[in-house]
View 1 (cartoon, rainbow, N blue to C red):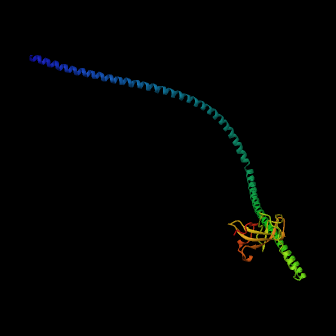
View 2 (tube, rainbow, N blue to C red; view 1 turned 120 degrees about the vertical axis):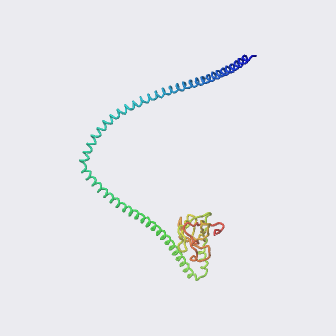
Length: 303
């Protein structure tokens, strides 16, 4: 092959390569344009859809605003009518206020006089209340004093009753002893002594079972006032136990019923459980109001 043929072949080869490069470049460019065109078309459609949606939202908002505007316009019209009415009412109120002000100015002197009268009445009322409070305090004090006097009177009456009962018992004892002494003197101390002793030591009838009472008053001397009497089967000489149930229980001693005997009450002589004179007993060993009186079936087991 000649050199010209080789040169032409080389030129054809170079032209083919250039043509292939241009072809590839055109294909790539066309492919890129297609992708971009598709993307642009998709974006355009989305933009149109968004624009349509925004337009519908705008129309809806516009219609809502129009309705709100009409509503507010109606309210404004009603408020304007109300304002007109209020203005008319205000005008009338101003006129009435002017009249009242004139009346107030005219009645200012009378008001001052009435104020002075009210102050005088208030002062008199305060003084009256003060006197009433003092009188009420005095009345309360008098009521309390009366109640205290009534309690003292009742206590004195009870003390006097108990003292009379004890005095009657002592008088009966004196009469009995006087009669016994007279009988002893008349009999010369012979067989009459046994008769006298039998009259003194006469055994009373047995007491009912489960008999139970209380001490009505604190002990006076050797005697105790109890809530049992003839109705409970007591007789002069009946024996009872007296004990205290509270504080763990305590047996105090025995009671011997005297002749001072009533249907529901009696006076009994106290004999302490501890063999000492009554004057040597402790205060808690003496019968007092509220202690229990009865018969202990098993003996004085409470200590």
